[in-house]
Image (tube, rainbow, N blue to C red; front, side, top):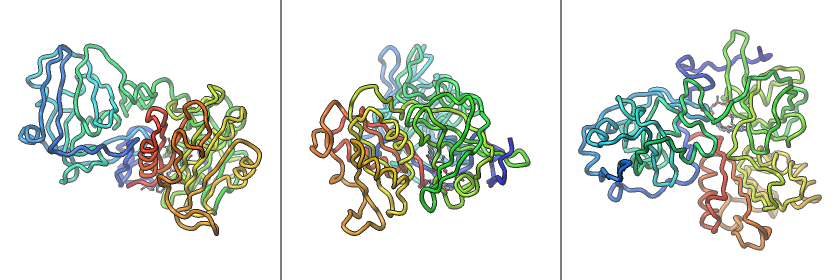
Length: 435
Ligand SMILES: Cc1cc2nc3c(=O)[nH]c(=O)nc-3n(C[C@H](O)[C@H](O)[C@H](O)COP(=O)(O)OP(=O)(O)OC[C@H]3O[C@@H](n4cnc5c(N)ncnc54)[C@H](O)[C@@H]3O)c2cc1C
């Protein structure tokens, strides 16, 4: 299905990529929390067999093993790929050489507490490494340094950052990411992004277009047959040029379940898809949509009456707005919303009405320019309510949802944990500017 007016950017290398991926020149940091404080002098890595036998290395031990230079493409499930990345590290063949095992799978463990599962066979045969250099320099903490796993033939979440160990298993056991809806295997060439079906591409017609800010636009879509979503979920959007070239991106759903699908798109300068959707789309235009996707960031209204703490940076407000709009039971909700200037606040009018009419409390944090008398500055500990804080509604453990650019979400998660919130109650979605 051709999208009127869409031409596409066709960046060099796009033809080398698995379906739905686009080439990215930067190196986005996609971790949920801050980089754990792992230093080479205290770093250890252990392979533990199913019989409990431990094979352990310290930094000296690892760096004395024969290392290899690796040049490879990497693919992130959020749709960016980076071509010809250069790494240096030790092959898993070397590390597994003297390990006697009948294991079929491994659980890779990171110092941040996250785990991911892989078949053991995928770590053998020159296809996986423990890497400690990127682009000729020590691997930076944000990218998993001092050492991470690198399994480039699978989506990048399988390449566990801040690797501390591999647990060998005689059966497959989901890791953190897989329990949260990601695919058990994760082959980019078969588009194994999530557990379950991605759903078919469906024809969607733009029925209305609403300017929200000078750079963000809501498009309302009629998508016959699209299953009902939960607030917080996303859809994939596909635009196709007249010559058949297509580009795909993910967008959070802004609308509550039950009505027409609304997406709010912030235009990215030099971007391929967002300037078209936010600047060119008109009623009657046709695009394709599939989903809804993603369970780990979804809120089930009516699940319980736990209060909601919602923290948004920039266009991270979009999935949180779907939650606010779905809050028909009047669950106490507090939104902390960081934007550059008042003009950048998306849904400003609707938020003001909801503050007056419902149990919604909002704190705006302006980072560039604030209205007279209002707070100017990034979100810090002074605006994050603690679990028993009077500023935050009493009640059962709150559901905490944080959405914004990766640097923003990492800072906010640290602040929430420092304020005493249970890390297990915090759910995070990161998208936006890339480092
Ligand atoms: C799960 C998920 C949900 C998302 N939900 C939304 C949403 O509700 N609304 C929304 O507007 N976007 C959302 N995004 C981001 C969206 O998928 C695109 O990445 C974004 O629209 C940019 O796409 P593009 O094709 O215009 O730019 P691209 O062509 O992909 O990128 C061009 C350049 O801009 C940089 N860049 C990418 N994104 C940004 C950004 N936000 N700000 C500054 N620079 C950037 C890139 O590093 C790249 O170098 C979501 C992403 C994910 C993964």
